[in-house]
Structure formats: C-alpha cells, structure tokens
Length: 288
Image 1 (tube, rainbow, N blue to C red):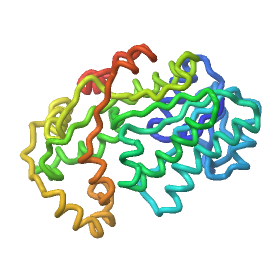
Image 2: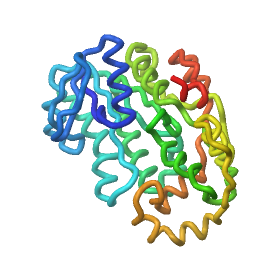
Image 3: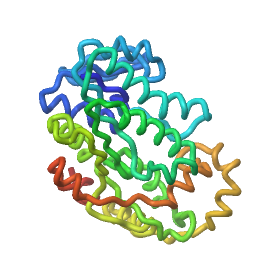
C-alpha cells in the first residue's frame, strides 16, 4: 500500500505498526531518505503533485493519507489539506485502487469549516474522500501525544515555566489520544473491511479541562503542578500578529486559539466496537 505522510511523528508510528502487522509499504517522501522498516520502500512524490502521486500509487492495493498542515499561507492550506485528498482519490481511481484510509481530525465539520483555514481546508479534503465512491474510512483523532512528541509536547513546555500561561479560562475540554492507539487504528481499519464508509473519532479514555490537562502532564512527567496565569482569549488574539512570529512553543496564531478553545471530545464507542481498541490513558502511555 502507499502511505502519504509516513515520515512525520504520527506517520512514523503508523508505518511501524503497519510493517509490524505484515503489510508491504511504499512511503511517499520528498527529498531525504528516512529510516524505514524493512517492509517499506521510499518513493519520491508529494500529495500536492498529482502526477507524482499517481506514479507512486502504481501497483498498490490501498492508500493511507496522513498529510496535513496546521499553519501556512492560504494557498498551502488549499494545496495540502484540500487538494492532497483530491489527488489521492484521483490516483486511486487511476489504478483501480478501492481502499483509502484518511486521517482527518476531531472538530472538522461543516459547522466549524468557516471558522479557520485549517478546519475549512480539512473539511474540503474530508468531503473529497467521503464523496469519492471508494471504500474509504476516515479516522479523526483528538490531540495526539506520545513520549517526546505529538501535540502535547508544546503543552509540556508550559509546565516547565514557573507560571504557566493559559489562554482564556482553561475550562475548555480535550480528550488526548496516544499515538500508539492512532497507529493501531490505521492497522485495524485496513484489516477490517467493515469499517469502509465510517468516520471514526479517536480519543483517549480521559477528558480534561485544559487546566486539568496541564496538571496531569506535570504529574506523569514527575513535576509539581504549576501555578497558572489565565490570559483573556481576546487579549491573546489581539497579540497574535506578534505571537505568530515567535518560535515554538511560544508561537500561536489566532486560528489556533479558536481551535484550542473549541475543545476536542468524542464518543469512544465506534473506536471500541469498529476497531477493537481500548484507548490508553496518559499515565499508562507515558510508561510505555
């Protein structure tokens, strides 16, 4: 199968799990040659380049698409998050490939699409897949975390500060999911044809307010809970022309504030029943 986006943090986990499960993989890469499992080969290409994607997909029986961006110019959002899935569908049709497993994200919906470029472009890409007529499965993870990486890495930096800055009241709720469970979800989706036609949310077993999440991260990493400085969301949004120029983890954009405050919660029943996954809690995952 062809994996697009298999060299990023989540992608590397997915590739390793697919290879361990006995799947032969062709991993789309740009210029560098990443370290891949023995059961995987690298092929040059880009989801924004329809011709290269079509060449890479030749001889494959499925396509996994993990590619997305969170920041950048308008044209990049359109090319990657919306155009990429369209090109994946076109490549599948060109070679008679029926199976696609596509990674979207919690919060991507018709309601949210007009609010940020990320949500809007990801919703367009999701629609391209779900309207394709192919045997698709869409997986929608919450914040993905793991030791040393994932979306919570930036939040971990906050708990190293004597006074942790928090946007708004800190009561918006999130349901982080372990990277290992996300990787398993892709394996199970590919191996269970009955998941075709399903949009399956992926979350962890715990729902935290943002304040609680910082306290839990402090606890599992062996740090004392930090005092928090709650900064009004409106004030933070007004400062984003400056904040967006800072290096991570201090960099934040207005759209990221909107998405953070919206929260990420989901029903775990589809994850459990369709994929057979009982998700790991943060403390459990950090010990693996």
